[in-house]
Length: 238
Image 1: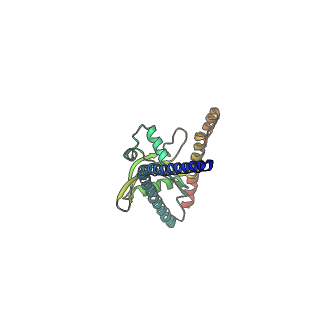
Image 2 (image 1 turned 180 degrees about the horizontal axis):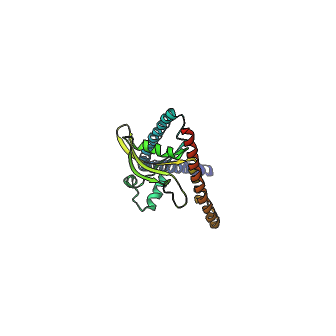
Image 3 (image 1 turned 90 degrees about the vertical axis):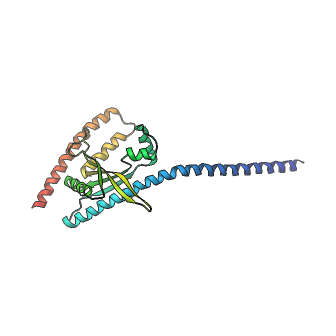
């Protein structure tokens, strides 16, 4: 009797487990189906910015190649690209108290796709920016010259917000990209300042002290860029 009871109980448990497993699989499929419908448009939207980055990077590489052929030196030391993820975009929209939708993103967030061009000399920055802006498929939205007008903390860089067309399988889209152009010295300083700003558990007194030192370093970097430019000009004009 006991053996039959245990076998019957085991059978019931197995049927219950099979039912729960099947139900869980149905709920899982339903959940991920809804999740996929929500996330796929957002991922596709982000892919537009990834394509725009590829287009802009290619343009700068072409300019670099052409300049190198004509002048036997590279105006670009390195190129860095950055793409904001969905969480970062969501946080920025909330901070700006804007609606959480794609239309709101397109109208208000211009730095989803970012590219940084590091140059040997200040003149290279303005030359590359001018060459890019003059291209007939590039539309300039915003220009901020933090080289001519540095920020209070000493930050220097040339910022551009441009719009570029990308050609997809069945459509053409206009996408905005943020471009930062700076010298090697400016990049070195900016990386150090960024580490200080986002360093966790650092004493406020130390932050104040280091901020003052960084301001001094910004002036040193600016003077270094100027001296290097003067030396370069003398070499070129000799």
